[in-house]
Image (cartoon, rainbow, N blue to C red):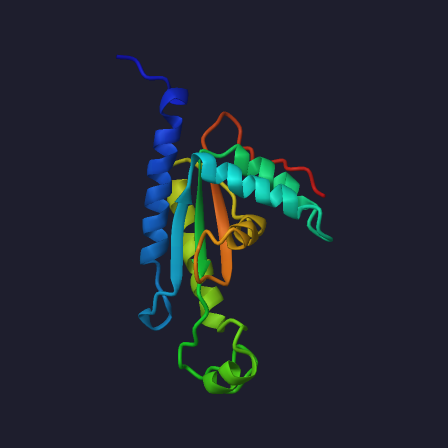
Length: 178
């Protein structure tokens, strides 16, 4: 049997994306509290997300969402990493409030600094797996916003999307600025 890389590409990208999700899940988290939701999109789910981004690109300051939608359509899998918001009880003041209780009372919808920090560490772990497997990827704020709008990560308030590709040239490089 002879198998061409283009015939196995999507299966390989799903496997790499699964490993990326595992890396995000096992990344260090503040106080060991896991506020993350992690998912993989393939097939129709990728198309739904891209369609939502195209729709959202009509909003002010979001024209670049259309470009990012095209990048998502060029991927074989998209990894979503999102964070629910919950205070860590450290009273660190990084959120701008002296205590977690004051932040919760005055700004319950604002994130604890550690929620977004944990999200970033998890995404960094995930993209390192893509690099280790020579898969192209890019972290997209826009894809996270679209995923939240579609409720793809229930309970999350912040999310990032990581489209993954394996073609002769990365679709995520030399993108036209908007």
